[in-house]
Structures are given as structure tokens and as C-alpha cells.
Image (cartoon, rainbow, N blue to C red; front, top):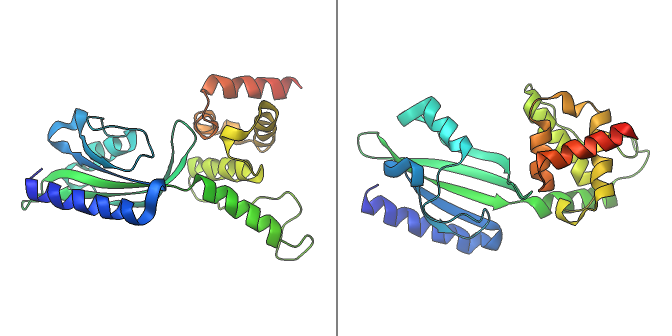
Length: 215
């Protein structure tokens, strides 16, 4: 990546983090060395350092689209330690349209999800026509089973009213019990996704699932 582009992106990254604070991280990738493409980072949300490789999501996009890869805005990912991030990735090209790198924004919305659920509990009116039955969770359905699965898991975890890191085993097992009853675990990738949300291993989730089914 040219020095002018790099200087501009670094200043943009610094400005974004200055506005949005410690929940925000901005990373710059230079694809001239794809295996160590992360060359600059402002903020600290994903605990990465310069020299890191691109994420799996980014590699899939690069492999599929090459130089024509589109910007990806407003998508959500869950980190291995259970953080929920709202993200945007903007790709940078040279004057001939060849891909040089990208600037990615990662904003930690984990606490906001649980605050939103808490506020909803305060403002909802049991029995109102505008509300579901007690205990119902809002679910936005899409045409993609994987997205439905992620939304159902996020909603079920949010109902618990705690960040997963502060939940004890019984609370996590109760979430697993409800998700199993809803048939979530028949969807491919559901155990891995829940493991990320819990900040645990997939084997821990499988153990919870076995225990609730044995119960």
C-alpha cells in the first residue's frame, strides 16, 4: 500500500477511535503480505497485534471476489471470548483498481444488547396487544437458516439479562435447554456459534447439551 494511502488511513483510524472511545477498534490491512496483513491498529477490542492475518470472513470475501470485493458494512461477528461486534470493512485500491488493503471498524455492542433488553423489560406491558406472551423474545427471521440461528441464540442469551462471562453453569445450561427445545441445534454451526457467545469451547456446549438431555 502506498505511503499516502497508509498515512490517510491511519489518521482516519485515529479520528474514529477518538470519537467512539474504548469500545471501538480500527484496523488497517495491507494485502501486499496477505499472511501478515494487519499493519496498524487503533483501539483494542479483538486483542490482535500488527502482523496478524486477516479474519476467516475477510479471506472468504477475497477468495470469492478478488479485486472486485465489495465493501461490507454493518455486519455482526462474535469473537472467541464472547464479544458481539458491529463491523464495517472498506477496501482500498490503487489508481488502476487493484486491491491494496482495507480499513475495518469493529465496535463492541455486547453491553448495549443487554441494556436494550433491560430497557425493554421496564417499558413492556404484560398483556398488551403490542407485546407477546411473557417470556417471548423478539426474533427477526431471514431466509438464511444460519442467520436465524444466530438471532435466536443472541435473543435467548439477551433474555438472561447478563453478559455470558458473568453467567454461572446453571444459567448457561438453561439457555442450552431452551435452545434445544426450540430446535436450534439441528442447524449446522449452532454449537460453534453458541460456544463463541459463551466464550467457551464447543466441547463445553456439547457437555451442557448432553446434561440437559439426560435431565
